[in-house]
Image (cartoon, rainbow, N blue to C red):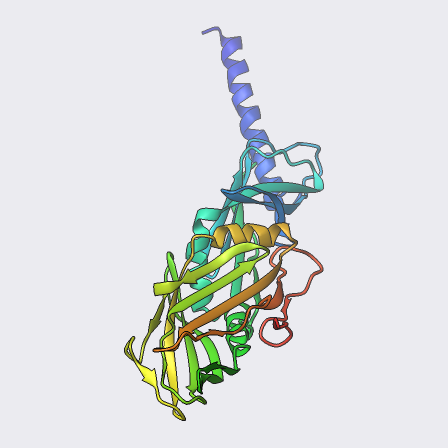
Length: 348
């Protein structure tokens, strides 16, 4: 190799090494540095479909480098959102262009609606309290490589409130009262002195609820303790959230042929099994309606009095119990509140 070429090659290598050394020294002395990344809130709702619910998260980036160099292929970010320890959202973006100074970046991710059944179980088991946690990180490759973790965003919603089971509890409480009819020369009927609802076992396919009734017989003839007919319809924003009928109601502490003699009182526990197949559809409606849901709960028991043509329906036909729920998972400047259980309205 010609001596002049060797000298040129050695000089080029020395120049490169020198530039790298200058950049490293500049980085170590703070003249240039890696960007910082923060997140003000976990995001905003985007487009929703039957399969996914979009979330848009805005990152605030501060690139302190005084030179107008744009970091491009060396910057990537990822983001996760979990509710009740169920990871519902995962989003990422690669090769992000970052100018000098302050800028914002949007990450578009999607909530997998198929995971909402798992979240529902965790939500109910957590006493209907929503615990949300959003985390993320960015990988920066400039002079040096570094992973930047975003400060976690955490919030708790509906603490000490149980809007779903409270709406059922209020709906069955509205069944309290006397329901009698003439059966020839005698009277027959029921007096519901107390009624309540509480969660039972909840799994991804099925939600079980225990309905408890204190039943008194004010009539002249024995009456059955297990209804011949049963219907329960619960909707959220018009979506059939839970439906149950017939064999979905199972007596727990009395046999199916048990009767109640005139003047006697018995407390009966029934288990209602409800299908969870519409949980995802309801959640999408909740998001599309600015995180607001109008619940309508309509339970009904139908008894046939033996040896008569008398039927007793509890309660009588009406619009059902109505209440509302509003959350602030990702909707800004909104409070989380509910009228279920206390401020709802009963049907006639």
